[in-house]
Image 1 (cartoon, rainbow, N blue to C red):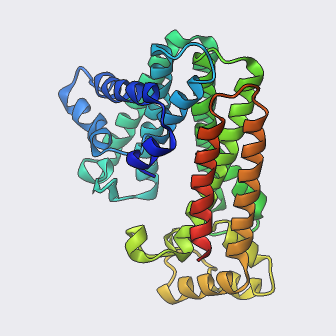
Image 2 (cartoon, one colour):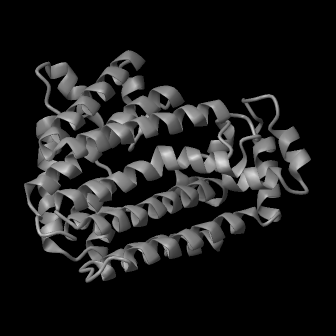
Length: 330
């Protein structure tokens, strides 16, 4: 997903005006008293990114009468949480690159990356504070959920016993929770009615789940060139996503579990065989069917919003993800 595509899907000039303000504020609030910390804190920020979460905040703010600076601050807060969590994720994953640049933990040290992530998360709370007690509590609760999702993923690594339900809890915590909070906080700061806030939150939750499930499917079936890394990288890291977990419960489950027993490093042949069995068993299509069902649930949530000025926009975003799912079937 990139900004030009989003501009076509969200043809609301006010939204993009506020997104420009979000970008300026992100640069401003990531400045520390120590120039060294500023350099580190802005390392990923300057590298760019989709800014999907603050965009959802600005879109959701259109559901209420107050589309001003508070919604901008909502977008800044959720993006800071996202950025801070990426710094921590790269330490956990021992990643050497992010957004086409050397990761902070590789460029400096793990300690520096953790402290910079903490700084960004603290700034997120600071930005949320003037938005009210409910906003601060929402940001704090969401980060706690992100941590729970990350810990669960680590606990489940190299294992199959947690099954699809465990997988859903991981991606709900790591991905969908912040996407839901982004829309929820935007609607709240926009002054949307409580029922509307709940509906857009439900919409965003389903979209977040689809975003991650489809991404995990692409990790198994897309080309190395498309991914920028070898297909099956999740398996190589001991993270077994929905299609693989489903396959492990099917007729070829014994072989898959045997191939991936004992922990990494897994041979390239074992990874490719596990992917082959997953595809042959139809589990990619089952995961994509799940995506389509969740997109329909998202559409139903959007349709619950009375006199919704964003009906077309929300359905366009739904369709964008649906097209992504359809392309993965080919």
